[in-house]
Image 1 (cartoon, helix red, strand yellow):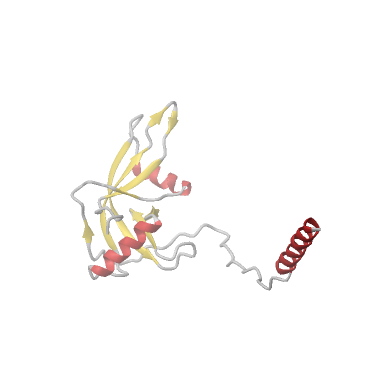
Image 2 (cartoon, rainbow, N blue to C red):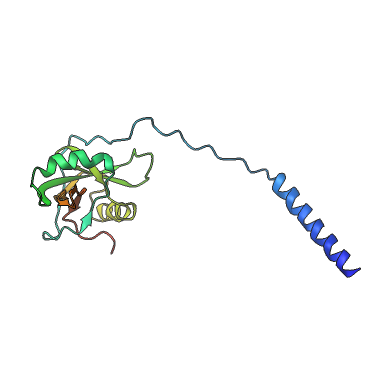
Amino acid sequence: MQLAISVLIIAATALVVYSIIRSNPAHKVALPPRPSAPYTPVLPDAPAVHHWSDGGRFLVEVVNESRYQPVLAALAGTDGDAAARAPYTAMLFCDDRNAYEDAAVAVFLEGQMAGYLGAKEALNFRARLKRDGYAGQLTSCAAQVRGGGLWQNARLAYHVVLDLEPLDKR
């Protein structure tokens, strides 16, 4: 008798859970449409208001997608089999129109898009801009395009490092 009551309670509980799941009024939220072409911000035609420096340590790495590799390869120049270490001045632009990242910071070299700061670093960089009175303004720093050396008969990817004080400690 006790087994029959236990089975009846389990069945009733399962029926209640099933009816709750089936009658859930939550609706799926529609996501905004993705652009058909990759998004690339436009660098404003304004001078940088501040030039950052960390004494030439180049500890902040730019996040770049594979679509920036041709730009970085052209900027790196030809070093034969050796890895590149091409110096540039990076322009750091707060990209408020980026549909994918709320606090994006775009990095430009020679007027060409080279990538973004990582999400956490972008938030910290924007906080630093605000703290130092440069919120929303174009700033600059020294940069290097590195990589591209030959390894096992294949060319390694290029990446960009910035001469900024590390952005993960503030």
